Amino acid sequence: MREERSPDEVSRRRRGQTLAEFSISLPLLLILVFGIVEFGRMFQSWVTIQNSARAAARYAVTGRYNEDRYDIDTLLPCTVALDETDLAPGTYDVEYLAADGSTATRTVSIFNSAVLGGEDVYATWYGETDCFPDAQSLDRREDMLRLASIYDEAWDGSTGLLREDLRTGPIDTPPSATDIKDFLYSYWGNPSPDSDSRGWFHVEICSSREQQHSDSLTDIVPINADALEYRRYHDLEPTADYPYGACLLQEQPDASAPGAGDIPDQYGVPWADAGGGGERVMIGIIYNHPLITPLGLAPYVRMTARRAAVNEAFRVTNAERSLGPTNPGGPGLFNPTPPTATSTPTASDTPVASPTRPTNTPYVPPTDEPFSCDKITVSNLGYGANSITVTIRNENVEATYLTGTDLTWDDNKIKPDYPNIYLGFKRINDDVYWRGTDSTSPTNSFLEGTFFFGADRRIAGHDSAPWEAVFVNGPVFVQQYLFPWDFSPSYFYFDHPDEAADCEIAWSANP
Image (cartoon, rainbow, N blue to C red; front, side, top):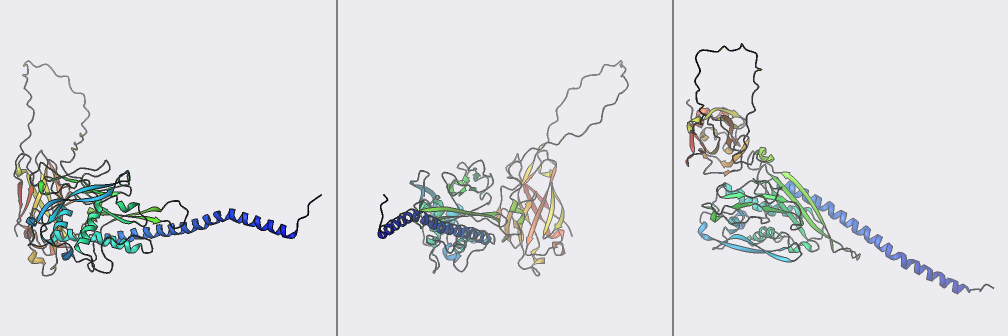
């Protein structure tokens, strides 16, 4: 006989079943809702850092820095009153995160200033003992402040993210020299001890800048097999030691070279550089997106955005250098001349024995003639767009390479119409070896501008090489103002393989 249940009992059973089903489905529902929320936030963060990287790259290629926020003379002083006597070598300890997760210390060679407001940060960053107030040092100081400005641009482009505080100083007030120093030196602590915290925001900046010092003072020692032997920095992909990549300095002083003792050994230290005109700049944005829902998956999700671009020719009309040197320099490679085709031998009359027996003439191997400066010529002055060209001929058996030039050009003839003209760069074998902003004649590559020792300056034996000097802020047709004799006399210097002194070859022309 079936037991009858009262309506109240049935109702209570149904309510219990509903609560049980709800309690089972609620966690799944919450996981679904939290998952939708987290996925939406992650997608928003990912899109934001992509835009941030693009904005930073677009700003970097302009060569500008935020002059309203960063007073270059206050933050990075450079005066005649300060010299190497105000600086002393020292070390700087910075903490970084080791591969095993522990905190380690990296010691970096620096310069310390004996006076308040000294040139120690500039000297440390470029490995030089003094900052002389000229165009080159101004370019370098601007490049240092470009790093802070690029970081600010990336920061502004990532508005809406839960991030750490701005690293270049206070937002509402101008930063101090200490703020800029701490920001620049913070790149040495890669990977950062803060890189495992929620909301960590980092901007990695690297470039294809070439070797800075002379070959006689420093050597480029590639960090790994992927590194190029003429680059001052190597843009390292993420590894176990550098989980978000690094820009490693790979220029090392030659301890045996006289004069190299003043250059601090900073080889292998993580760095930052935005490059010069025509060089590549690589931007990386690394962000630890914090998870806010109680799913317990992880405290954050790391996101990365990378962009690469070519700097505009913001200082020199030098876009050709965007592809980098055509040759890393040095003695070059031996390219033997392929043999020419010979005629097919034809049958000849059978020789008849002669009564006179021929005598054997001993074979004397040919000897190479000694290297002579007289066999190097500079000729055929011509004109290109904004430029002049000459042909360099080496009739020696041995190769040589260009070591410098002292170019005369009558600036008084051209400045009335083009007062801002200057000699921007010189190149040989279609490779830029000198860059500057010299506005007065003569222009000596030994004394002015930046000399790129990694450029292909070689002239093979019995061969010619094209040479060119390019003017900036001047007329397209230079020949309308300057005739060949207006470049006379000019001097070209070449390496003599057997003597200490270079070959000096003069070029001149008569009206």
